[in-house]
Image (cartoon, rainbow, N blue to C red; front, side):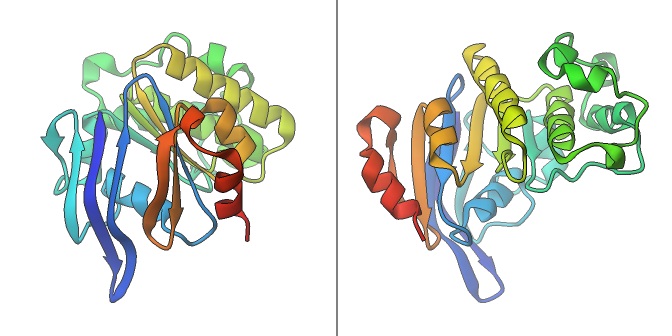
Length: 231
């Protein structure tokens, strides 16, 4: 289980997170919702080690990982699919996928058996450059690259952004399949409530660097959640 305990994060003098606490459990999708600029991506940067925290603790499977470098967290099974995908545009699809091998022991450096079953479009594009793919195909590539690392915690930052509806459905299907296997925790940052509601077992809502709602999906009032997401 991931436990974010009273975490604060600063960018210089600016406060991005104010003693925030959050949990994400194996076998569940935890969705973090909120308007733009409320601290969702800062939360993910804290969890993955992309930015140091100012206080509190990040605990993964009972280990305090707050001071570990991003690559050390990746070796412990934490994979991040950032907003904007961040694939390598000049590398082929296969080469992009192989960058996930960096955190694995040599004996495990092979693609998961079902990777192309989850993303069949990638199997037909292994020699195409990443930059030649559509936005939706690049998003599928970014998620597949994360899965190459054999994660136990998969962190997704707005995977539906700028994606056509048919591929959004495909991505939702993959997230649900991964959750149903009961082998990983999934932390999903989203702006779109309907997508989150259909996938999440637990929902947290952020505002101004703090969690203002947190609970099981069935426990939360949908209208209250929507109101907090409206501009």
